[in-house]
Image 1: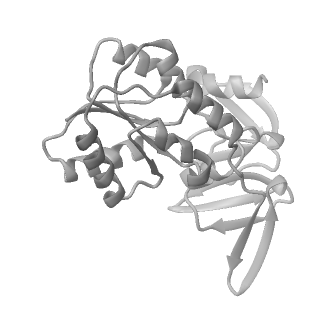
Image 2: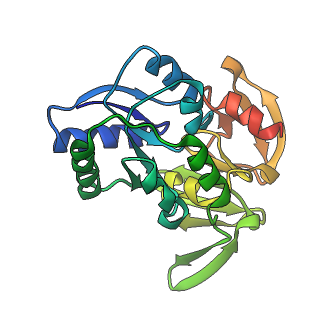
Length: 251
């Protein structure tokens, strides 16, 4: 089974590769690709039998790959979208897996592929239409527990989320900080990408928290946040995220 993983979260891609090898030790993982641009370039010169494809990549929707080049390759989607929002994908792809991917679900998808193994082309216009009409229900608030107390935090009151010392926290515009039970990867899928942006591995920020921006070394961007970020946390847009960040700001 010659397959390629298209996923822009390195940890998610590595975990998926690990699970695939556990289920099919003889699987040939030809490549792990992290963007629409890289995927198009690679797929023009290689011919996998199966593609594991995340819907949202750092430089756009992965459906753009199929609009740019002609592919007759079965696809298993990996996505954080709610099952009901993508139910129609079952008609257009081999299968889909909700993140975080579970081993038993992955095994079932691979077995389904092996049974269907035939020329297959997803109906990309139908997928785009489904995605546009079934918008995710992004979080409006978080219910947090600290000690014996419960507190609700409205999404518009959150300035940023950050990871530090194996824990994740949110900070409000009122400079209140609370621990979270979710990872940054999970939170990134929960909040509206029009409002929040993952600038690096440690920070996910609200655009309203941006006070000033400065050109920084190696084409990066340094951000002055309001309220300021905590000590040992840098509000610095990573090199690979800088081009996408500029597009996000310049809308």
